[in-house]
Image (cartoon, rainbow, N blue to C red; front, side):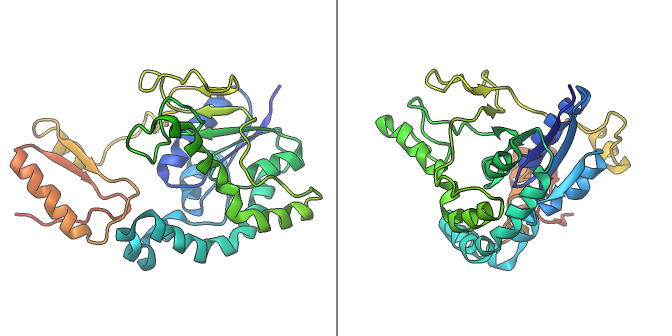
Length: 290
């Protein structure tokens, strides 16, 4: 039986590409798939034939804004203050966009960052699954991804921090739930729904204390069409010598991309290798070198 499935994600390219891969696999099996995500992903998603619903937020514009770049050196807390000040007050628009994307769906597969997706599943009586690309299910075997060392008996309790994602939005969430005819919702993210962790057990064995309904599926790789051809200048460069090293920072930004680019070029020169630099969203810049 063909199902209508909404895939929801919020973030940069690395948060969207796995959902596109999942969408391709589901479409190949005869299901109807729509993808809801950040504004800046719309053109890319549509170019691969998917119905796209904007969640009303442009991640690239946010990260490229002068205020955010200025706060980069302040770390996550500085960025969180900007999010709290500028983004949180507009959350009601995102919730309504989530609701529209979920209308008529049989299944919703959502990244935990899309706060409100499980509420939309509830009102649509849709099956709800979480999908994430880092291990976020509580375990005593290792700490959450943001921590860099083993913390022993604190490992498992610290995962509760990730369940607090609803808390800053709770007032607006409950106002939206009232519009939908639902009672006030939980302030903690639920762990009872099936969960898909898209990483490989060859990289990280599945923890033995995960619930049975939490699965480690392997990576969801999204490949460009087979007919894609590289730019002639790129093809000439690749064929002109030893295989180059690729250096890039993806969707990360930088306060001084020219300085970072110079540092990278100097490192390549010292290593005596060829390199291909990916400018991404602005961590690196065009660098002139004789």
